[in-house]
Length: 284
Ligand SMILES: [Ca+2]
Image (tube, rainbow, N blue to C red; front, side, top):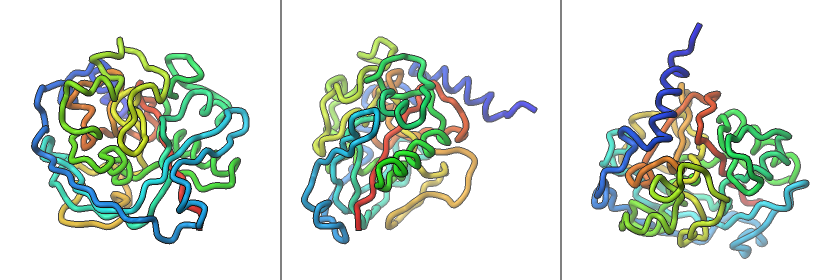
């Protein structure tokens, strides 16, 4: 029997790759709607080494190392009123610090850990793409096993917090759509292909490519009603049909690249522009 989600996913993949539809390019979209604010605190509960090292590299056999930056606990305004599934804007508190990879997972790193590379565009320093959520989750599990550290996919809240990087959004550098090309490979400059990870300007927390290049899987099940009021360390619904993707891709427009924008696919869908980003938990 044909899975209707897969059928729908294929057509959505094509639309998204071309920057069409509701994920598209409406100028001015969302510039005043999010009003995100962020406060940060020192990371409690972390081992002394993790509290002091803001940027670390973890060696990975066969792929050099993975670089991460420390993201401190804090509160921020999550979501926007631009699209129904992004709102309402609510206060989210993350009580634990975590390390966040400074780039998307490259194909060299993905191949070293997984022994395969599903990507359409071939290049060791290009982001791994056409990765299913199930594969992305397994990547994090194997990376943990081989390094002795705890890697996992980010929650939606962690991802959006790291994307905003203390700004009020809707982008991690502020609100000027004309500046997006300095920070993102998107439909305006990508020439419809992926580009080497970490080659656009990082956000204020030292993180690259949160806008564009490839979409990034999160651990949460998707809900079109992502909560309201306040929440602490949210992890999404207990069950669901689709998993969340964030950040848009080389085919996305300026509206699609907003920090609050959301997309979802079946966890076994091999979406054309789906990549991987990992977080690493602090040692205790
Ligand atoms: Ca990205």
